[in-house]
Amino acid sequence: MPSRGISWPTLADVPQHWRVAALVSLVSGVAYLVRTDVAVAQERMVPALGITMAGMGAITAWGFQLPYALFQIPAGMWGERVGARVALAVALAGCAVASLLTAGLPADGSVALLSATRVLLGISQALVFPVAAMAVQQYVPADGRVRATALFIATSACGAAVAPLLMAPVMERFSWRAVFALSSVIAIVTALGWVTLMPRGVPPSATSRTALAGSMWPELRELLRDSRLRRLSTAYLLHSAVYFVFLFWFFRYLIEGRGFTILDSGFWGSLPSIAGIAMVPVIGLATDRLGRRIGLSRARRRVAMACLLSAAGFVIAGAVLPSAVFAVLALSLSSGSINGAEAPFFTTATSIGAERGAGTAAGVLNFMGNLGGVMSIWLVPLMSSAWGWHVTLMFWSGVCVLAAGLWLTVDADEPGSVKQGMLATP
Image 1 (cartoon, rainbow, N blue to C red):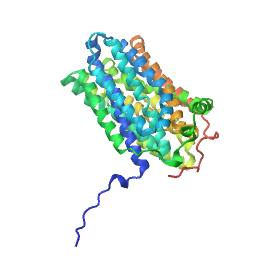
Image 2: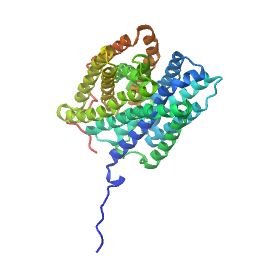
Image 3: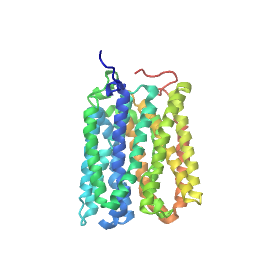
Image 4: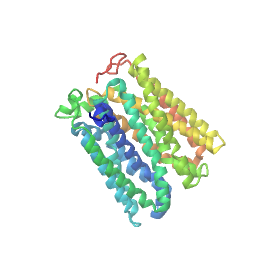
């Protein structure tokens, strides 16, 4: 008589759309780990290479963030052409090469070479969010897209959280160069896993007319004329300006503004990202459930506004609280709220662009968002030097409120939005 063994679930038992969501999430997490490592390494890299902190801010803003922003739309369009499997493999390979070159920077002439590696990293990373959002639009049913998008946003926060925890001890034990070498290895290993496990092609029902057309420029022009996408993207510019304050300068704020050591900052600097990891999936699940009651588009707008207004309140609390620990906790909740608004932004953009190219629409959105990143990365060190961290944080709280107000101008019932009860089928 044959023995009855335990039948363990396999990869084939998981629905394809959730397998894709999990793989996309892995890629976004690693991408954010790679892009965040410089925030830790710069504490030792900047003096070693003879660069000022303001100079590093300029290199990050104009060398990484600006190319990253400028390539969002071309990245989304190219992702529509070649598919997510190829596009994200290329993104990870580019990240690995950029990190390896950064690890080998010479002491002389390092400013120009560092700028070049940041440009390569920015172009490579530009593929990640537009293509990930496109993959969710193509594979995941409409009433599960906020959850799926929230999953890859949460893992990007996980990557940003792991970076200080992993890289600060590596830098202390070895050197700042080891930080970038390790990032390169992680990116290559992830690329190999992604190519092996990601399905080829897309479901036939998800192939947009844009991907089949001879030219994608008419669809891009049509998207840029859509007032809903323009207003949404303006709100995202403001939202992302605040987000990048946390992503690039929170580690520095803990040292300058609150007197933490480098190792202590490695732990406390991870809390904003940990808050995002915890809050974003819950917010995504709640948004999809609310969408079944009041309509998907209305739910996404209300949740995004609630997140932005909460973020503004927590920033004010973090600026005024005398206790360093409670201030960091408040700012971490603010960062988690900012992260929580990401999924409604991206799912609304890809819904607007579903028939004209979801990847391109996400690229337009993220292009505007990263212009906000260029602005805040460049401005924060100047503002903190001139005003101090207290006033600087209050300023960015006001930016959150303005972004929430702009969501009121995105009419959930305009043609092209996802209506109540009109859910896509798997």
